[in-house]
Amino acid sequence: MRSTVGFPTMFVAGRTDSFKFCVMQLVGPDLRALMWAMPKKRFSLSTAFRVALQTLDRLEKLHDAGYLNRDVKSQNFAVGIGKESSIIYMLDFGLTRRFR
Image 1 (cartoon, rainbow, N blue to C red):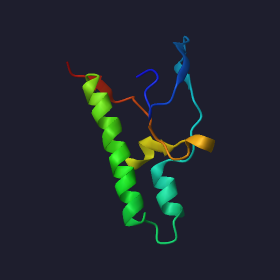
Image 2 (cartoon, rainbow, N blue to C red; image 1 turned 60 degrees about the vertical axis):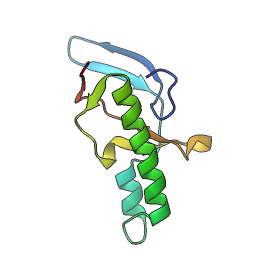
Image 3 (cartoon, helix red, strand yellow; image 1 turned 30 degrees about the vertical axis):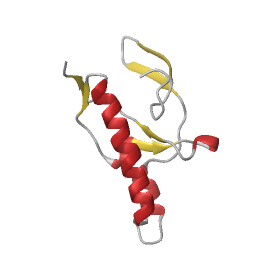
Image 4 (cartoon, helix red, strand yellow; image 1 turned 180 degrees about the vertical axis):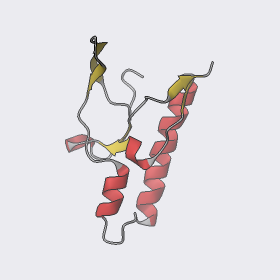
């Protein structure tokens, strides 16, 4: 998903004898943390619609690339930082599988 809006840039990935690793673009807080920080612990209706549109777009892009994410939850989506704070990023592809 290189250079695709809503997917963090991966700088390097590899493995050692003990573990696998990847270094990715830094993003902001996840959607669950943002929601719990709200006064009523929920998003406004307009924010919920904007979040839904972006998260569904990320899932559609992933599916179009032939992958299925089996761990879709609010903690696996985060907002960008700085000038990218209006972009929602999809994270944690550990349970993602190829289906084509």
